[in-house]
Structure formats: C-alpha cells, structure tokens
Length: 211
Image 1 (cartoon, rainbow, N blue to C red):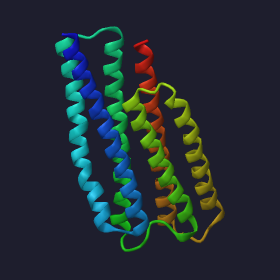
Image 2 (spheres, rainbow, N blue to C red):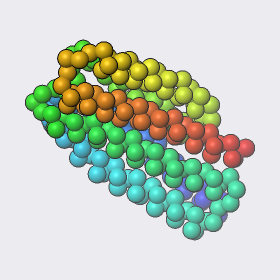
Image 3 (tube, rainbow, N blue to C red):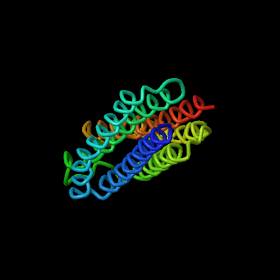
Image 4 (cartoon, rainbow, N blue to C red):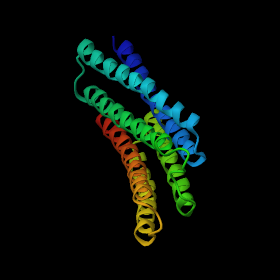
C-alpha cells in the first residue's frame, strides 16, 4: 500500500517538474518573440498557455484524488498541499509569460522594447529563465537549500527592475504607451521571479516536513 502511494506521489512530483520546465520554456520563447517582434512566436506562447492551464488542472485533480483516496497525514499531507500551491505558482508564471507575448500582438509592427532598454530586457529574460530552471531543479531534486539561492538571483531581477524604472524616469523621449508597456514588462518579469522563489520555498517546506 505504501509503495503504491509513494509511486503516485513521485508521479505527481514529476508532473510538477514538467510544468516548471514548460513554464520556463514559455517565458524564454515569449522574450524571444518580444525582442524579435515575432507575431508567430507570440502566438505560439499564447496558444500553448491553454494547454498549460490543462496540465495545471490535471495536477490539482491528482492532488485532490491522492488526498481523498489515501487520506495522508503529517508530512505526506504537507507535501501534497505544498504541491498544490506550487502548481498555482507555476500556473501564474505561465500566465505572466503569456502577458509578455500578448504585448507583441498589441503593438505590432512597432517594437515594444526601445533600443535603449533592450539590454535590460534581454537580461531580465535571462534571469527569469535561470530562476525557472532553478525552481524546476528544486522540484526534481527536493533541494531544500534552493530557496536561498533563488532569493539571491531574485535580487538580480530587482536590480534590473530598478534600472528599467530609473531609465523611464530619466528618459522623456517615449510616449505614454511605450512607458506603460515597459512598466508592465518590468512587473511581469519581477512577478515571474517572485513566483519562482515561492516554488523553491514550498519545496523546502515539503522536504522539511519529511525530516
């Protein structure tokens, strides 16, 4: 009985890791579409978001089924609850990637990102991808120390956001629409990073509950 439960729990965890990987890929592709002003690339990200929503739903249904059938207690229950919350974080990350992609279509053929801040957005996209990859690794390996490492990387995102907003304050050459787009972009990347850190914290919580 315990072996069957452990196998189901391992499968649940694998699905979370897969969702984390696909979420990372979504943000990477959204950033590429943003910088390349690619309608096709943006459309792929937006289209894939519906499928990611279904994956998120299946994971949540599996978690609820585990609770109903197995009636877990203590550490096992905390692990499943942490997984449910992780799924919600990953779903929100995928939605933020979709928001980045949606800006491409809304402004096409005009680029969303002016050349002056392009290096900052490139770096924000790279940091976001790195954080998502670290969150995926935390889920896969059960590394309880990952949260601290991700918080340090999150500090990089905060520094980039401050730089972006600082440029917006100093530069007055852009119209209101461009300034609003850049403000939103900064917020999307920052929130994506925050959710990645939350994923690692939930892993640490789940691992700690099993000790």
